[in-house]
Length: 306
Image (tube, rainbow, N blue to C red):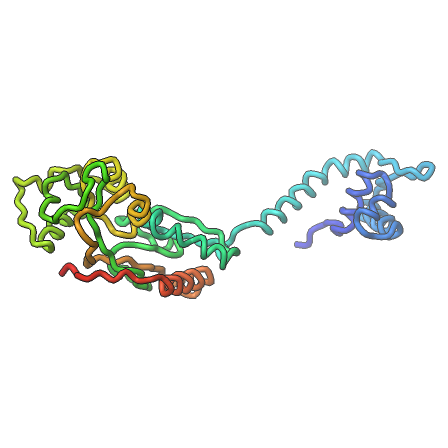
């Protein structure tokens, strides 16, 4: 059905003429000639079958019909203008990039690298979500950066990095380097989802371990960030991924008194739905991150945990 509407140009000319009560000033504002504005007003008056202005001594005066019409259309024009601004500035699927990552991984590994991405791809609006490993839905995010294997159906995964772990603690707890056997004399902090980490590390170091030696005497935490903060204040020794404590070791907040890091069998991946594989934001971010990592010096541990 065809709508019964005047031209947008005639409405622009009418609105400007009402504000200025002058066709000349309206013409200057709209970058038109005075005769063009006058013609648009005549066209609108013909369309409405009503006079909108009265010309008195070279002055414009709104008629009652003109005043009523202006009152009715002004909020509609404002609404149209606001709608245009919203569409022009809206972040749509082609400019929004939604990433999901484990909170500690995001804080210590991902976010420090995102400055480079934003510098190279400023068109993308980043949204970073905390990842719940037990409830991953690849349909609600563009890219997932996660711990674990390539185990989602209809997903494409790329290996990011292997994991190395290192025992760290506050220098207030242990002020000097000790032998690996002596670690068992201190409270050992645990991640609830990795309760075998310390037994595995001690077995790798060939340290005899028994329950009565206090292997599980230290506190347990749900997240690595909690363990790191607990280690900083001297609650015990934390066995954590090296990338998570790199800055704390450099600043001296934490020390590694029981030797070098070792590689575990754990890995981190970048994954996305196969249905989204051709989306611009996914392709650009994936290629950027993989190339960025190629430029970084790889950590080369001397031993591997089997």
